[in-house]
Length: 121
Image (cartoon, rainbow, N blue to C red; front, side, top):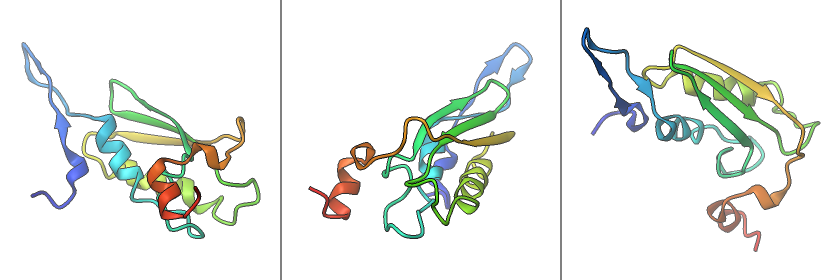
């Protein structure tokens, strides 16, 4: 079993041979799910903080995410942690992380697993 299971790749072939691997959405989500809000014991993906994930043909990735509150003390570190997690996925050539505030985050965006972990039913 690989050390980092989120490095699974989808390779393409052309008449000139194998092309560079393109990261999969699943691999990127698994990488993002390793990032946790320091105040909440649930990863940011399950919290619903990731609004959009775009993968470009050249291996570039764009992530739109928010925070639980505009004054979140992790405002500086969480986007950088997401960027670093995505860059660790094989095939990612660059990663831009944009913080967005519209729509504002609310607990309804959390996954069922996150609600169970936080006893929010």
